[in-house]
Image (cartoon, rainbow over all chains, first blue to last red; front, side):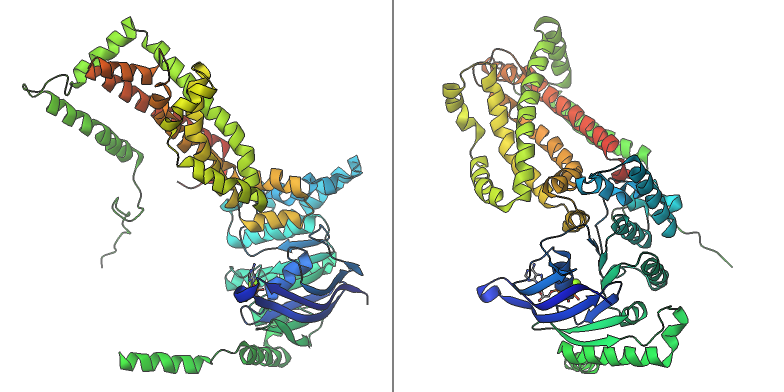
Length: 279
Length: 270
Ligand SMILES: Nc1ncnc2c1ncn2[C@@H]1O[C@H](COP(=O)(O)OP(=O)(O)OP(=O)(O)O)[C@@H](O)[C@H]1O
Ligand SMILES: [Mg+2]
């Protein structure tokens, strides 16, 4: 297996002086070609920052970051990013959003008639894959949140990126829609074989989707542990109820709680109750 | 057993609905009530017409102005001055605002400076404008420009800054270079807000008309108001003020209409 993304001793410091925040410290991680890796961890542990550094949207202050063995210098079409909110272009229809990358010079170099045809065919295929045929000419704000995220994913896939970076892409969706999206993204992963780095707050989602789950810890942001998911590559919703799945989920949840440095919920509740009595 | 039908939210619900008919009814009330009040106050027998002319006097003055004093020419020249000053300021402000809202160094150089100048009263520039631009038509346009430009730049720059970062970054991770990001994303995303800023600043441009026509003018609505003041033609002052208001209202509505036509995706609800 070849390494797609190599994160070597990467550190990130925001601000200086009294505003200095060490968001990431000595991150070491190799992500293999076609691998699906999810990132979980307490809020503020640097998941988004790491993803943005891989995407070239943020610069690391120490260490090396390589894709295909070459250092990353800024964002590029080989690493598409899907955001949680507000990334679709409201003035373009669904179809125009998906074809956006075709309007860029980068997508127009040495272009032939056949390429234009193929691109158009690919847009149609992505539309069908995402179940958006009926919405092709709608504007984004006519769509539900789940449909909007499907458009965002289709748009990211349009340029055949080798890496797909997703920062809580389903964070704003309801549980049912989310399950549908899970199977959809797994299907996409099987068809297109991109390498996927996926940040989430939902441990169940993290396990269900991933080959490996990376657990990060805060202050300073670092990798705490990495879990290889003991499930067959073909995932099915029923697997969420298997003992292996549940055991791993419990283990990860417990570890996140330990690393987060927050009091347990029971302590909090006690405090609330005491406050109530005192008042 | 009684079933209760769900009730339509009333018009006093917070951000509640209002039917089109009721809307126009209320709007008509809002416009006609002050007119009625004015009529009532002016119709008292002991009210001096120089102090407060009635609606009829004002209407008569409107007719004489139109018939004898070439009202249309005055309106035309004023509209020309305001729109020219406004357009020049818009054409210069737009690229500057895009740069200020996009690049921090440009912001650092231009924004504090603009902020400083915009607090200077446009009237105070009159002597300088006369000195530098002269007393030709261009001087009136220059005053309108000074009155609107600096506000316009700052507001447009803010519109540009409000473009969601996710939209910009999405383009970058699809391979957009800098000029593509600015042209295909930032400008497109900011357009509706910029158009609203144009609508608002157009209104402000009109408020500088009287100031502009202080400069050696011999025609125009603002000039006529100033001249009427000298001859105590209060009714003519009323006509001038009301006409400026009406022209402003019409332009405002035209901008709103154009906004609806140009950005239909913003008007999908209601
Ligand atoms: N642009 C920035 N400037 C300053 N500090 C930042 C910036 N972005 C992130 N940080 C800080 O870096 C740390 C990591 O933030 P990050 O957003 O990566 O966390 P996260 O794991 O994604 O959190 P969440 O789960 O809440 O999304 C936080 O302490 C945050 O305050
Ligand atoms: Mg985050």
